[in-house]
Structure formats: C-alpha cells, structure tokens
Length: 260
Image (cartoon, rainbow, N blue to C red):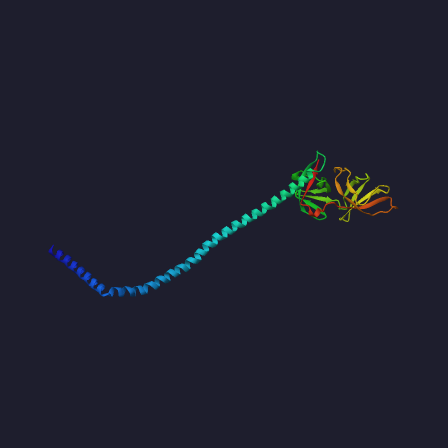
C-alpha cells in the first residue's frame, strides 16, 4: 500500500515538474517560435489542399450543371416544337374557318354538305388531305367559295387527288349566264381551259363568265372562269374561246368537297 502511494506521488511530482517547464518555456517565447515553424510548414500544405479541392470541384460542378442544363435545353426544345405545331394548327383552323365563312355566303343547294380539305400537294393535279374515312368515294365536285375547281379523281384511305379543269381528260358541261349559250369546257395541254362546241350564232364575248350547267353530279351555277381570247373565226362551225381562271389555285390552302 505504501509502495503504491509513493508511486502515485512520484508520478504527480513529474507532471508538476513538466508543467513548470512548459510554463517557463512559454514565458521565454520558445513555444511560439516552434508554433510558427509548424505553421510555416502546414499553412502552405493546407492552401494546396484547398486549391486542389476547388480544382476538382469545378469540373464536378460543371458536369452537374451540364447535365441539368442539357435537360433544360431538351425540355425547352420540346416545348418550342409543340408551340410550333400548335401555331401551325391554329393557322390551319383559321384558314379553314375563313374559307367556310366565305362558302356559307354562296347560294348552293341546301342538300349538299361540304367537307373541308387541306391542300397538301399542287401541280397538274391537286392533292387533298381527306379520303375514304372522310366519306369521299370519287367523282365529287371540289370548290372554293362558288368557284368550281375540278372533281375527285382518285381516293385512298386518308388522301385524294383532284382532276383540275385544265387536265386533258376533263370535260364539264358549262354555259354563259349573260347570254344563256352552252358548250363544253375541256382541258388542253394541262394548262388551258377551252370553252368549245358553242354554236357560231351564239353570243359569246370576251369577259363573259362561264358557269357549270349542272350535269354529272355537279351543281349548276358554279363559276369556272371568264372568257378570254376567241380562238375561232366566223367560218368555223363552232366557236371556241380560252377561259381564264378566276382564282389562282396555287395560292389556296383549303378547299371543299361537295357531297350530296
């Protein structure tokens, strides 16, 4: 027991002695000198570690920003594409409504219905974005306002093709409302309409309007054009004249298919 007390007392005295020594050293300023030496070594190391962490963090942050930025760009592109689609659709509806309003002002027979059709192709024939699923069967008249453009020549499930009046295979019975004379409107060269088989005694003048006679399922009174140059002379049995179109088909976006 006495040995343990002596040992503890000795250890306590050693600690007291060490404390006194540290106090004296600190009073003399030796500890501050040692601390400054250690700091001179550690501070540059800490700065280097901090700079390195910043350099490593920047690419990581850029990667995270790149991923989120690309996602935002993709979303904006999707929204822009949808906005473009909506804009085109609104434009198409406006054109269709405008054409319908004009058509409603035309005195066509009440038993006829009108199928709006977007023009999807132009050339020697007119391609429409309506077909069998819209009730088309072929042979129907195609109009814009009260102007007759041609007849549906072929029909697929969702599209159809219109034979225009300038088509060499086009034959339409027509008359001149001013004088009452009638004849046959035929296509020529894929670019001209000719009012033919008009009796030589018939009153036909340049500028006369030409309209459908009302045969072959085509309503009577639809305009097809106006008389231009008279091609025949007085020695011919029949008169012939070029018929100029009233509307530029190349500028039409929407037409209507007539169904009885």
